[in-house]
Image 1 (cartoon, chains in turn orange, brown):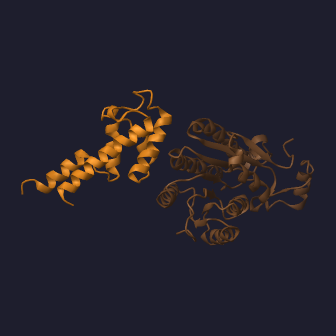
Image 2: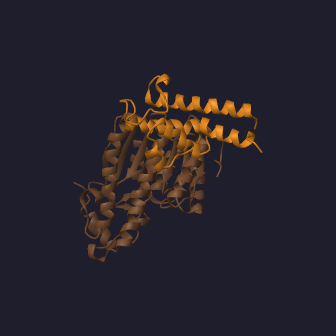
Image 3: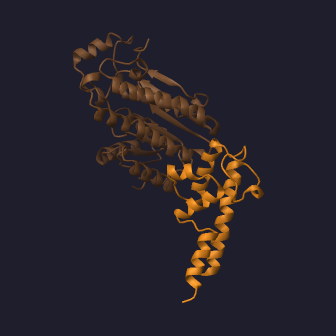
Amino acid sequence: MTAAKHTDLQISNTGRLKHAFATALAIDVARISDDLAYNSIAEWDSTAHMLLIAELENCFNLMLDTDDIIDMSSVQMAKTILSKHGVVFDVVFDHATTNQTGPA
Amino acid sequence: MEPAVAPHQSAPISLVTGASRGIGAAVALRLAALGHHLLLTARNKLILTTIAERCLKLGAASATVLPCDLTDQAAVLHMFNQIKQQHQRLDNLVNAAGMMQDSVLGMTKLADLQALFSLNVSASYQCCQLATRLMSRQKSGNIVNLASKVGESGAIGQSAYAASKAAISGLTKALAKELGPNGIRVNAVAPGFIETDLTAHYSDDQKQQLCQQISLGRTGQADEVAALVQFLCSSDASYLNGQIIAVDGGFSL
């Protein structure tokens, strides 16, 4: 896969993640940042959390285990957990780029 | 296993556990006649395949056999992953898998109690967990659990079984409250004495004694329970939620 394709995937997955959060929590996508945390806003309560899980599972075509669901306490944690399931976000991409193009 | 016929996506998708025999098999056949896509699970693949063939003859949109030991958590997760990949949604879950334990308190091994809870409670719980993940996004779905008259009233020599079924009643009511806002209804049927493999060990004398306590004066058939499950899975039951409905010929009166 070329770097350009990696970039497309990176942007796409970040966008898809934000869209999933916005849909499940019924909030504007502009409010989605890495710092946004579970129970820090009224819209992200336990009921919405399960809707979020369903949305993320559908969006990224995977099934999370119960520990993942419990641990998903912020947008940043969501990225970390989804990365564990093979979804590529910015940080993972940066590492991959470094590995591919770093000094020999 | 691939569905035996091409899916008709408009038909409801229904997962029935314990579908190889008794009430589970009867439910599968009932839903098949309504044209559902059926996902049938139990441990015995051979018997499930036979039930699936009967379902297709009755008009099921498809009948997929998913052999699984429901006490194996990883296997259950894998099964739901298969369902997600194949259908992306689920409309009905019928938790019919279960086992019985006939022994008085002092003669019940804790290992047997744990095995009973593992299937009757934990497996149903996990199926509810995973099914609601497939139902939540569409904001609709039905879960029907198999409770029991014994779980509601108790019975001598069935403390373990009664405890497990009482747990199912509590689970049903709690989930009805929790999942209602997501459009998911959760109800349970509470059969009385139904003629299935679970009750096959009862002698004629024991059955006669029980029948004296049943106002209709007879035991029930699996299909009579399945008829209620079919109703609960239909839009005719759209305002029914959190109910434990007896199907016992008047046994509980």
